[in-house]
Image (cartoon, rainbow, N blue to C red; front, side):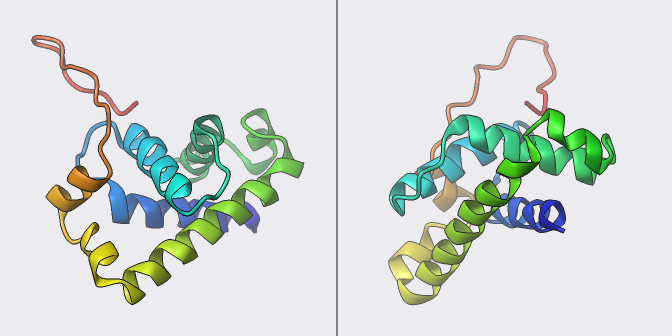
Length: 131
């Protein structure tokens, strides 16, 4: 059950913060890290990478539940999910209570401006990837 809830929580952050079709995992990691720092919730880029890998494994049926432990040990799922859910709740509450904060999520340009991502420079003739 935790894995499913964690996946939905990750999807909620994607809906709030991803502004481009490419580099969705990068947008998730960098922007959620900035949010975590804003609310002073301890979360590392590595933990966010693992959270996104868990979500991808479930959503894309790449791994069965017992194989998800290769991404993150089972005992670490609940603490990571707890912090992600707390961050999501704080973010949504702040959006409702503070018009200025809510405006940071108003549209893609607002998100891009407040929560910048260090996208890699595109290579000439290369197609962008979902990293």
